[in-house]
Image (tube, rainbow, N blue to C red; front, side, top):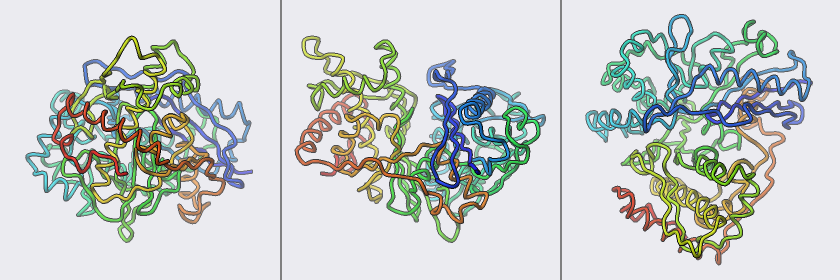
Length: 508
């Protein structure tokens, strides 16, 4: 029997899935570490992790898989990688990491990106990059150049987190066009490296690694990595993609009009278009999707909200490590709208939907004589949903059609309260599937190594396990709750976007 192996390089943990080629089903899965990996916050707005830790947890997760399922190394036909987007890993000529990775929720480069947006011209940036340089990887690299020149001078190549894991597997320094676009290193109009931004920042294109196709044999497991992992030397690495393009791929979201969502550490809605699309305030972003070709363009329009699962995780610690399913049951005991208790679920770095401004989480309307823990948990879940719908409506204003959304049956979508609020506040149908990011990476590996002839053929075994549609009587109640939440957002965190009515009201 032959298998495909997928790795999900997250900021909380590393996940690994083993997929049977014959059935398309996941036969074994592992996660490491069991407790969430720490994020170093040396200063307010900073967020760093050690890339070497990611690799060690890849080794640990692989060992767990082998202990659970006992497959032989030569039974793995291909390996796929998905990873936390927008991180910056710096590699010297000896292949060593120069400093901790600056990860996705780090806000230190916001002002640099904003200045580049103004100096290069908003119309030019949105027309060519589809994004403001914002707080993305290119701006983080500029921050290193300005603030750590001795480290910058030693850089041989930069890597995204998944590129680094592929490097540890193969010894080859590479990236993809999709990866370049997520760092704002890509000019969509020219279909080439964003040389204009590099020149503005004074960054040499020589620091960018070799570009390979998302679905392709990008290298083979080295003898050193094989020894560490217990895998076969020469096993092909045949897919890599950022977590949100990969989440969409794992749900067979490949064509214009198809929508994917995830609610892990961050919350994301991701829709496919075949034409360039941008938001004038760069509150949502566009990246090259995994199946993009020059002949058939496919871009992903991404709305991201940082304060999603991290809020739920924080609450879990506060309430004494209560299991998440118990928290979900308790949240359901409070009524819709949590009797006026409101949560603005920010507090995890600069939020793009708030024009890339740092914002604190806020709990509003607390009444000691009315509200219980159930109300707090429900208000948090509703607040996350409302923030997602706020961003989703920005996407709608750009012309993205949102009617049916696909998601994996995982993370916050396991909560009935979260699902019900999402469907009824967003006026959409939700489909939940038996998949996750690591399984998507494994399927992608099958495409890259030629087991599946095309991405569309990689989804044997993918099953819809729940479909949830809005209900008119619930929509009315959630509409009222969202209106109260939106009014609080406008008062507490004023931005130009919160006063733009055509993108802030849910479509009912």
